[in-house]
Image (cartoon, rainbow, N blue to C red):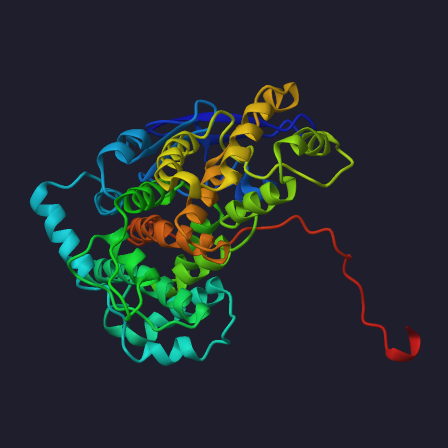
Length: 431
């Protein structure tokens, strides 16, 4: 990282402040304003942090204008084509792709941490029978620190590593248990001879009364979705994990906070909203009127799954998901969901409309992921849970990176106060 400086001038007072400029490997230069208040008595105002780098990180890079997503420098397209989710998890945690023996050892460590403490079964059954799986996830993951408190020293690298393995390994088990509780079926224990995605599908869909084997197409589709969702730079949930971690909170509490943030419909719940929108549109004949509604600034309706906070080009993840979506639905034959054909037609019409072209509103990853999950038999209430399983790897990678940084400080954003000025208390009889 090479530094130079930028001179900030106040035309009213003539005051000049020299701000260091940091330049990373890729991306826009960044002004260091950490001493701005000390030097000028002023804060910056940036709602939503649209122009603020909250940290330095070497994990993920996004170029929204060009539609580029890199994990540790590797293009997402190459990783999606050649890697398993576990291999990508190793990469995100360790910074390099594993050698064969490293991958074998890493997979073994994950596999042997998939079980959860048996006492947690009573924790699940204490939830109301129709509790949303994400509500259970927040509670169950947050409770892990009560069961695995032997490695909670966030300043100990070995404790951090063990907690990372436990989180990545146990999240699918907790997710499947949340689903089983929701539908009233017995919990299914993990199997050490199965891969990460096949194990999850078995824990979700098998029953004691009959044998179960995950479909290869379903496993490949889930593997791809998990790779694409594993990390996405400083999004809302990752930033939540980092902010929680900055206080020294244990990793399970931090990830539980990330899950709570992910639950929001503007973040992890967007793919469920896409399916709701497609169901509302209903048929191809209705696409035109709904597009007109989306273009009407006085109408609150919006096309879900189009546009992205960062990408101003085609979301590279959406292009990859679109391909696997075809593969999954082709495998289903006559059982393919008609919503997929509706989604294809909606995309075709929208991308020929000047309104969407001018605003660079391209389909994003959420546009197709919900359709795939639905095709795999996963109910909409579990869509965000699946997202959380994949994103746990990214959250853990960022948590480990942050905890290893000797310069990290507790997060403490400032504000632009616009409330009442100082005033004196008035007694009840004079109000």
